[in-house]
Amino acid sequence: MLNNYETDEELKKIREERGYSYMDICEVCPEKLPNYEEKIKNFFEEHLHTDEEIRYAVAGSGYFDVRDCNEAWIRVWVKKGGMIILPAGMYHRFTLDESNYIKALRLFVGEPVWTPYNRPHDHLPARKEYLKAFLENEVGDRAVDAAA
Ligand SMILES: CSCCC(=O)/C(O)=C/O
Ligand SMILES: [Fe+2]
Ligand code: NI
Image 1 (cartoon, rainbow, N blue to C red):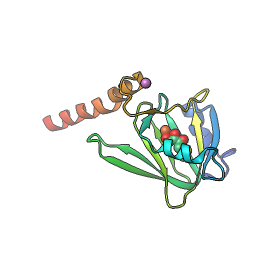
Image 2: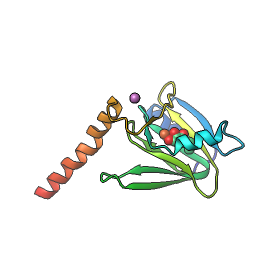
Image 3: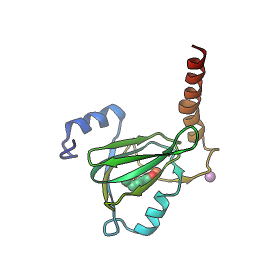
């Protein structure tokens, strides 16, 4: 469990291993997040980014929704001490849970780019590379399993 994100050794190791040079804090609640209503609406629009989205919950909790290979939603409940890494090009959305509050570390490789591309944005290279790296492999794996 993360105690102090500025000194935590485990987090330091993850940052070094994965090259997460940038880190800041994002608090999601009406009092702390400027333009809260607009932002929370945008977070819940299904979108992708051209880089990884990395969030580490230091307080509160929230839901990250992603889709399985049949397009069904999978809800990931990220709570205090939990980390999520969404690959570049993976569609997702975010919403708060009943606690109505999350304080998350945002990590990034280099200068951060937070631009969301709402679905559909299948023509982006990041989307094509994501499909190639994850979904095509998975289909390939199943074909091998079926033949075994
Ligand atoms: C928990 S941080 C707020 C959500 C966010 O930054 C984002 O990009 C959701 O997709
Ligand atoms: Fe996002
Ligand atoms: Ni576009």
